Length: 210
Image 1: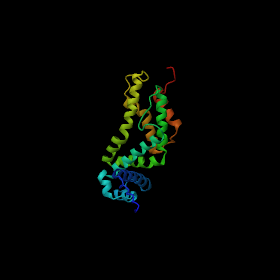
Image 2: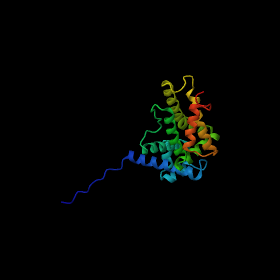
Image 3: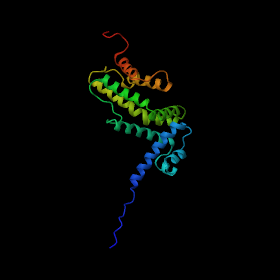
Image 4: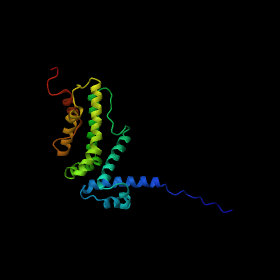
């Protein structure tokens, strides 16, 4: 009797889709780092990823959407590889320590070439492209800023922050200087710098005890 020939199941469409999506993410991030956002195109991303541009348009309507989703995915992948939940600020009961920990992680991210090029490209392009700027704020900035608001409100409930403080304004005391220094290259981005921002924000500039 002739040996029966085994029949291999066809590749899963879900698996193919995930592989294509991952290739598109990688291609978008790589191209922005190499040629900048203005010169990055859907056609270029498709060619680099080895997919048809219609595949990209099936999932996204613009290169901005591709890049932002790729950037968000990169953050999630990085967080998972580090063993913690993405987009989370710890609440250990020590507000200063929690903020310093998160800002140190932000320093690492801002200095990581994988993050630096796409995040700078999105931030810069968002200044001149109103629609991209709104999407950048809504999808990338607001979720992170809201986490700071939530953590500061929890600190208010614990009595560690004055009840009259507006958390949304308070977070700018340490987030905004870091963003400005990073965007404008006005000084080094270090752990000591972000630790100092937290100390100044929480304890003020007056001598202790006054």
